[in-house]
Length: 315
Image (cartoon, rainbow, N blue to C red):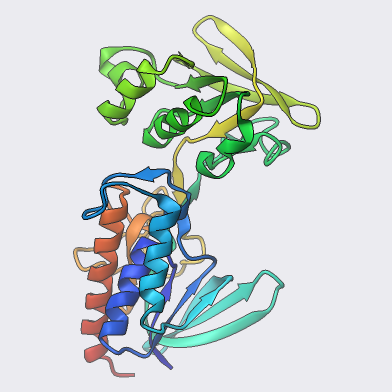
């Protein structure tokens, strides 16, 4: 039986793994991939000690740090179920081939992060990877000298547009908010510096109060429909970048693990969930702000709290 199993391999999972390794715990990590959403981030300028770094490079450094402690990582496996047995837990995982395995552990840290929210409109599913993407960093270079549209009004949408302004011929930005002071000029949750840069970009056109209704095309994306205050509109595009928020990867964490209305795992100041022995950290939790630094800090808290629990553990 393991002392601890960490589910997830991005910022929160990596920092938890480093602290668990330094305490010589008998533990392992289970992750679909190492890096998570950090690896899909663009340029990161707010990680202390590094002035600027690409998200995938930072994720690689996290992974290298963890592996330097010879941590066992089951990469490519997805945890599907957690069962409580007396005072310990059984985890059921499955890989891409369908192979299943079970592990038993005294404690668990859930650090599975988030995934992109979808528009759920006609054409979105049909043209995924045929012009529709949720990762501008991954797919943006494919649209060099073409016309793209980014849908969203937060920092990820603004960062998408800034990246595409240096690649594409023309970039549309569709915000569902009006261009009013009350809505921070259409970007109520955006950082001022990003908003200013987007507005200054010469090949960017911002469309306000836009509700995207359809992504059109034949074998690939050729256009986008939306409704604004004037009615239904259509623009010709080659690619659509969807950045409308993220949803927690917490569906497997059922039973007595309490979540809020948007499925985030509720934790206390020690990252303890409602089920003793299970901790959660990072973007999968109800933490107020989704930031790499906060996720890493929560991972440390969760690891230290798990160690405290293990020291008192009895079956």
